[in-house]
Image 1 (cartoon, rainbow, N blue to C red):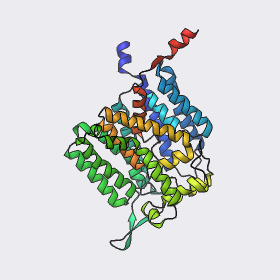
Image 2: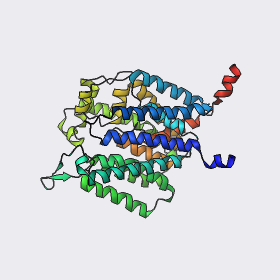
Image 3: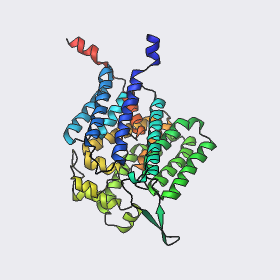
Image 4: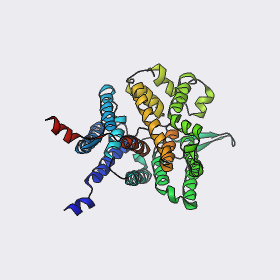
Length: 384
């Protein structure tokens, strides 16, 4: 019986099942026609995920002081602003505390790949199911003409890179120690091909920069270069500052809006016109405002929707986590978190639990560094 229980790890199976629920909800939100009411299904998937993760949290008797405080704070923030993004991703990190990192990343890679391939097949075999059937164009100055941008049936040319960033990052993480010429050909070749058909600058440039960063970080000893070490640790804060300045002061700048596909104009709506970026617990925006102004920035989302308190908490976790990766020379971890940090400047995915495995690993690492562990059940029995 003991040998059987060792072979069948219930917590791993539960983690995989919960992650499946989270990614299912993400794909339903992304690809189901907005006119179809799936509110109940989304709620069931969300609260089912939270409930499952809470069971894993409660049944783990040994807890660090950090995870208890972190989970408690995130629950309070959720009760205040009713936004469950950071709560969900923190609970995922806590639930993965005793699960191998490679197992976690493989789960993200396999489940995401299956869902993405499934979406591509469905929307290309049955194109009438694609709810956004607009034809997208980009003006190409060198030929002085409009060029059609492919969306692969996903409704938006940026969607393919957005959903593949998890696959690229997971592949790099798992192959890092054996990264070779074949890997480079596969990754660089696929990025170039997808970019040439979608002209998605956000995804193409970010992932291409990430692949270049892989080459640099493999040979660079960032641990012993203090300026680079500090820059890496405070980079999320710097990106937030740049995002706020861009959205607050350059929202009517023609060049900024052209380079960033009108994002500064939309960001300003959340920062100043319909909200206040200095709100402690975040702003609540009307559904019409959100539908007319896409919030394509994780940093604007965190500071405007989740609030300054959540932003401070999350920046602290990123600072500690990135510092820990550098100190322990965890280069594969550092690379994937940097890819997500850069990509999140122009897309809202940093706290997307169904995509951002790098943040799950980072928060898990921060929790595991706290050696102040207590056995909750023994402590309760003593009090009785």
